Length: 376
Image (cartoon, rainbow, N blue to C red; front, side):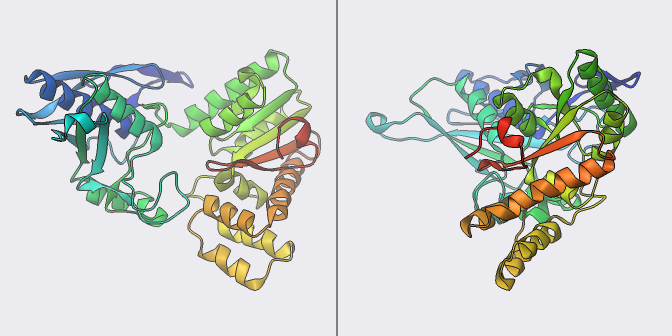
């Protein structure tokens, strides 16, 4: 049986899974143990950023004096994840160098089936392996927890099945070529039964009101939550919407709430500025069109508007706007979010909005939001 950890949503029980990041970290730790101790490892334990321990079965074990190899199969639990069941292999090799010059480090490389970044606007630089920052930390920590200092180790990750699996994901569109991404900020996969998940979000909303909060911060995910916590808001008043903006606004409308602040990454919140109230990419996009329209309204030149249409991600579009002194475009998008949300709520509840990016942090606030968030 797989990873036995469950969550209840909407009266139903769902089995949790673990991310490709946790999978790769498990394989890395197993390879490190075999290389150091020169013996086969059949099971491995990884502590995830969510503070949930995951025990995984180790496959394809091999070790010699200077090299070890181990594989772990990704288990997505009850989540319909494209990468469920993929085998991720790590090969760990000692690098022989002059010990007097040795600087302890783990050199991470990507092999077959692991994507590579080919376009800007993501969390990683062009040319890097598509192993996101948190999984990178997890993988390197997993090795360092086992191996002594003053060792230089080369760590190769590969997953041949990832070549075909990646074609079914958004990786090619985002400019991630050749395979899957190694992802996950919490290390754990929570099943996305839509109706049950939406109801669990609504429960959090009702609980916040029951605790006496009249001002709520609505975020799309973990990054928005971090921005709200950094601004001094209480965790209980920060409510996750995921992609279900319209659903959550309908629930807000049913409760005694005075004010909401929409805090979102540009790639999600810009859709709300265009009147899109389910932000899942399979249902609606229009990000470049909305940004370009606001650039045109702000008086941007034709070549600027054309450049925005050629840009790969919303994050990259923000970088472009800031480089061309067009901060006003982002301010106007904030105001458009407020206008669309207040219209949806028939102006019964006050709204403010905040836009951030992963690289720049907060980049724009709607009027009056300055009193809630520090921004220069």
